[in-house]
Structure formats: structure tokens, C-alpha cells
Image 1 (tube, rainbow, N blue to C red):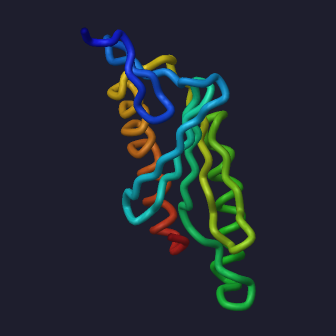
Image 2 (image 1 turned 60 degrees about the vertical axis):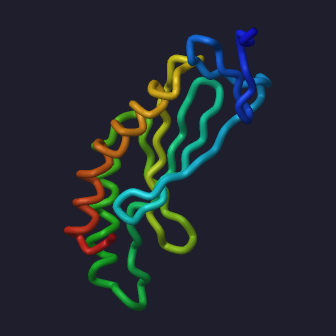
Amino acid sequence: MIPSTMKLGPFLVTDGGKLSFRAPEAEARFSFVWRKRCFAIRLHDGRLDSAVPIGRVPSSSAGAERRATALPMLRALSQQFPARWRLSLLPDHRIQLEIAQDLAWPATAAALFTPLFGLVMQVAPVLDLMEEAGLA
């Protein structure tokens, strides 16, 4: 007899292929590299949180001119982002893009990959801009 659910890491998989967490407070983390950037993903509470370093602000001693144009550009860029996108400047001068997405939960594996594919397609123009500005 085939069980109606099976355990897979922190998940239960239903016979319909839907994933749910085995414990309410559980989460899953994974990462992937796309365009030489590591996307860190956290799945929890029906949400996908993503963090990706998209560039680097030059230090004031090494790239004062590029730094002077980078900061206003980043401010203007962040004002154009959707509500759940946020830019952070990390202590080591990396620029990190953080994105929160809601998911219909429980979800199939395919339903998890669809928003991830959409994420990289939406981030692509931002990466292009960072490269053109010499901040990648």
C-alpha cells in the first residue's frame, strides 16, 4: 500500500504532489548561481525570500568618482522597485537586493520554480544596469 503522504526533508509530500512543512515553524533554504551571482532563497510561512548581491559600491579611497555617481543612482533605482523589493548596502560595500514573494501554500515543486524563474527574469535588467554602471 502506498502512503497518502511521504516525508522529504522538512516537507510532507501528498499523493497529489503538494509540498507542505512537517512542522509549522519549519523553513527551507537553498541557493543557486545565475549570472555569476548567488541567489539565497528562504522558503517559510508561504513566502519566498530572496537575497542576491547585485554589485559593489567602490570605496571612497579607490573609486571616489564612481562612488559619487553610484549612490544617487542606487537611490533612484530603489524608488522604482516594486513594494517588496529592497536594496541594502552591506558593510563590505556589496549591494544586496532582497525580494519577498507570497506563495500559494502548500505548493507543488513546479509551483515553487515558477516564481524563481520569474524572479531571475525581473532581476536581469537590474543586473544589466549595474554592469553598465561599472558596479557589478
